[in-house]
Every structure is written in structure tokens, then in C-alpha cells.
Image (cartoon, rainbow, N blue to C red):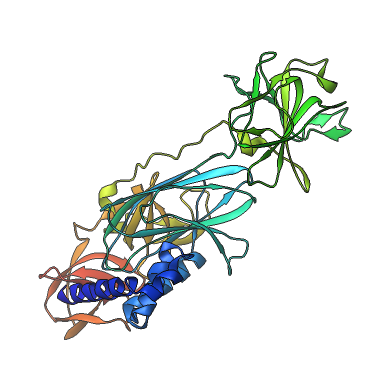
Length: 437
């Protein structure tokens, strides 16, 4: 413990000194908080130490070993200062959605880095957002359907408890003030006896009810055509697409006008080819490549993550399986199976989500396991008397691992669990380690 405290003080002293040097500060301006910390470690020469190298390696390898999750998602976890952890999760998101990533941590002043990546190439992911040092939520508009990844990693030698929550919602405000927000016809529905496809969504509401700006931006065109009748085109600020409002009874906005979210730009009607239908707004989105499905941009349905039912008291504890059980690649029974575990297998709990724990096996494999399939190791499985003259007790289930203690013939130990050809034991002095079966 004294050695760890000395290293911790050394790291803090070195990094604080580096941060105060005028020449280094400018290098950090474009870097994320995680990258800034890495640069400070390197500048202090701590990347040459085993601990510094392990921290950098954990950051890089976590991306390659990211577990799959579905949004929305919530987990509560714990990072142990005695280890050098990093956690990464991969998920898919749809163009038009807005994702919100919030992170609450204890202690509040601890440094826990959160980065968001776009996985256009798993070997060369693109970092697109990072939480600030206060860990304010990340809100990000998804501009491209695909796979994304988040990574969590604390600074060295910090105990951090956290709750991570990722939710999805629309990136645009709903385009009408209709309380029912009734969408009655969707993207791709057949039109004109299936001669063409619907390039938008139809939102129904009272005649001459307000149609509003879904984003702040500029009114680029106000005109009339055979299909849409009276229409308004709005270009959101900073975006590469245009919003299309059709079948208006009256156009309120004027070409070139700057509008804010919620400003009335027209009144709902049924002009154009909708004159024989009930009152509704045709809402579309057009990019340089043509029309795109607008539903993810305005979908009013909000999904919330499931409650965490797995006991949080088991976080950072060593547990064992109560029966033969699967370790999954994501927290659901239909997920891919990482491996099947035998009864009494030892695992370490990192976090909890829904009814699952994210766990690590002694060999480093990670995955999700149903929390009901695990038991605490407080009560030993059985007693074991050492029969050979000297029994090596390893700190890992590996004959090449460091030897913690040696047991003598006749000593009795408690067996806590198993992994492969090793048993986890505890001696009369409560020292825990692995012996060969």
C-alpha cells in the first residue's frame, strides 16, 4: 500500500508540474481530456513504467474488445484503483437520432474519461465527442447510420463508482403543435397505385393549426407546386439537409427569414394533391443525395433504459457460478455466446445492467452473465488438506504467474471456486490465491 501511495504521489507531482509549463499547455488545446492525460503521462516519462504502459494499453485494447449493447442502455459499475481498467461498448445508431450520454460518478471530483467514437473502421475509429472534465452529458446528432462506440477509463490509482446512461431521441423538434402528434402515413408507403413511394411522413391535425420550425435556420423557399400545394423549405443551421413542409393552407414564413425552433411557418391544410384527403402536413427531409426517412429525426416516442435489478452490492466482488451458464457478448439471452462456464467458475463483477452483470474471467475474457446464476464466495465449497510437501499458491490461475505463498503438507485451506485446472483457495490467514487441482 505504501508503494502504491508513493507512485500515486509521484504521478500527481509529475503531472501537475507538466501542466504548469507554458510550452505544453498549447499542445493540449485540441486534445480530449483523455488524450491530455496520456500526453502528461508521456511527458513525465511514466509511459515507460509498467503502470503507465498498462494504462495506455488498456485504453487501446478496450476498443478492440468492445462489448455490444442496444440503446437505450444503463449500467452502474465500479473501477478499482488496484487495477488498470477501461471499458468500451459498441452500439448502432440511425441517421436523424440524437443520443444523450450521461455519466454520474462518485467521488464527484474523480477523473473518469468518456469518449464517443464513430466506427467507420474498427482499426481506425474516429473520435467525435468527449465529456468535459465536469462530465456534462454528451448530446450528439447522428449524421450517419452505423456503428458507434463509447469508452470509459479512469485515471491511474482511482476508485470510481459510476452510473452510465445512454438514451436516444429525435434530433429535430416535432413540426406541429398537435397534441396527438399523429403520424398516419410513413416513409416508403405506396402512392399512385404504387407507381411511386412516399418520400416523407404525414402528420394529421386540426385544419389551420400551426406548423412550426423543427430547427433554427433559414427559410430558403416559399412556393407552390402540383404535388405539395403550398410549401415551405427550411435549411437548419449547420446541417446539410433541407426540411420540406407541404399541403399548407397558408404560408406564414417568408423566403430568407431566420427562424427559431417553434416559430410558426405555416398553417396545416390539404392543398396540392391532398385536396381530397383530410387535413395533414407532409413532412420531408432532402439531402444532396435525395430524400431520406424523416421519422428518426422527429419520432416523438422516447425509449428509456430498463431498471437495474441486479444487486449493486456485488460490484467489484469475486463470485462463482451456481450451475452451468453462458457468458454472453451482450446483456440478453439471445446474444452471441462468448463461452459456457462450468459450475463453481470464479468471475469478477465489474458492472450491472438490467438483470445482468458485466464480468471478467480470470483469463481476461469479458461478457455478460445473468445475475441469478452467481453466488458469493463467502461460504467455501469445501475444505482441502494439502498432501504434497510444498504447494505453490499463484496470484493468477497460471503456472507462470507470481507465487504468493507456499503451503505445506497437512495445511487445510478453503476452496472458493474453480477456473480451468485451478482452484481458488483461502488459507487460515485469509490469503487468497490459486493452486493446481
